[in-house]
Image 1 (cartoon, rainbow, N blue to C red):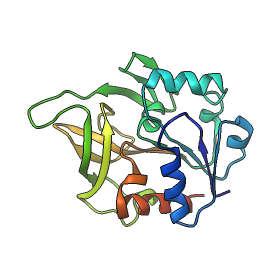
Image 2 (image 1 turned 30 degrees about the vertical axis):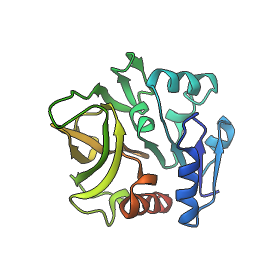
Image 3 (image 1 turned 45 degrees about the vertical axis):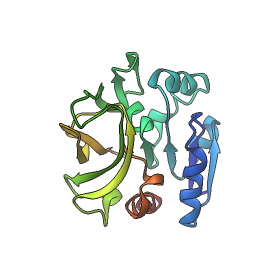
Length: 197
C-alpha cells in the first residue's frame, strides 16, 4: 500500500480513495491501529465535529497511535485541525501533535461561515508537499473553524484574516482544504505526499 486512509467515519473517504487511484496509488481504508502503525504513509481525513471525531479516534485506540507515528502523515480538513492541541468547537481536546488552538471563523459581510468554495492559497515557505504549487493557486475549502497562521504554517488563505491552509511539523502535514476536490492543484499536493519518505 502507498498509503493507509484512517477510517474516521467521514463522508469523504471514497473521494479520497478515488483521488489517489487517479494518481495510480494503492490505498487502504482502516481503523486498525496495527495497520496504521505499519503503513508507509497515513492520511487522517475528517468531516463533522471535532468532538465526535476525537471520540471515534479514542474508541478505536487510534488517538494514542497517531502521535507516535514516524512516517509521513497528512491531515485533511478536520483531520488537520485534530493534529492541534485543542479546538474551540466543543471545546475539544485534540491530539496535541501541533501547537495551537483551532478557532471559530467569524462571519462578516461577504464572508459567510462556513467558508465554502474555492479560495487562493499563498505559500509562505518551500516544502516538498508544495512542490509545483504557486501563489494564488485555487483550492476547495469547506470549514467553520480554522488555525491562525503560526510557525507551523506553510501556506495561508485569506478569509478576513490569514488562516493556515497548509501546515507542517516534522513528519506531520495538514491541509485545511480538500485536495481530493481541488482539481490540478490538489492532485499535485497528493502526488507530492506520495513521494514523501
